[in-house]
Length: 133
Image (cartoon, rainbow, N blue to C red; front, top):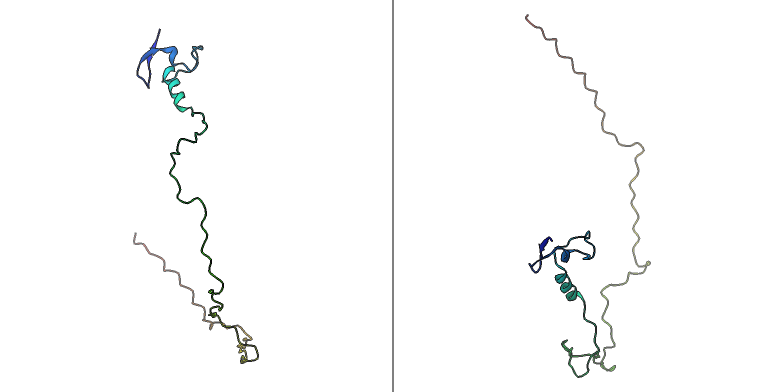
């Protein structure tokens, strides 16, 4: 019977140990043997959760403070009663503002055009070329 080397454990084993389905000889041939695949599957499986024992300390680092701290309260008689002066000053009343006349430039009746230039004279055609043959 034919044999093959395993890509993981490098052992020479019979061909049925490399088949995806060992019962079916026409199934896909894999590069690792059935033993290595079983070992890999066991490593992939996650351990079941177990109940915690209260006598065993946690492996996580402890946090220093678990309760939120409150800010110290400032007594009301010490708090300042005045507000800082605003840097934005209010607008003066409309009566105290001087009225200036609005100067609107007059609109011209005819649009301004550049002075017209006389058309250029047409360019004369070149003289015919005479050949000496």
